Image 1 (cartoon, rainbow, N blue to C red):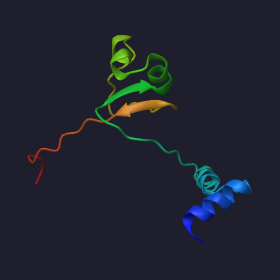
Image 2 (cartoon, one colour):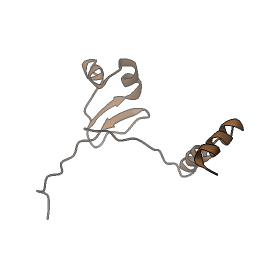
Image 3 (spheres, rainbow, N blue to C red):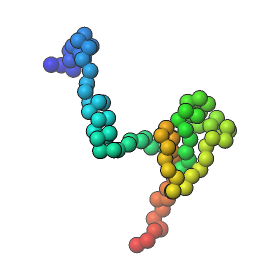
Length: 91
């Protein structure tokens, strides 16, 4: 069945993909969490970002702390990771 016909069929019969539920159930079954990565090594709460509207507004409000490698990630944290990719490491 062509993709456009399949989409129309699913819409008419209110058929939804079970994939999101399968993924969430699988993650819960093996006690995994998922997160999204974005940029430098700072942490802000998603609710703060949503409320204030921009990264610069979150910084101006003082809600953009820099944390170290021992920081325990909290639910709804938006994290920017900084790392050094220079060629001078151990050989």
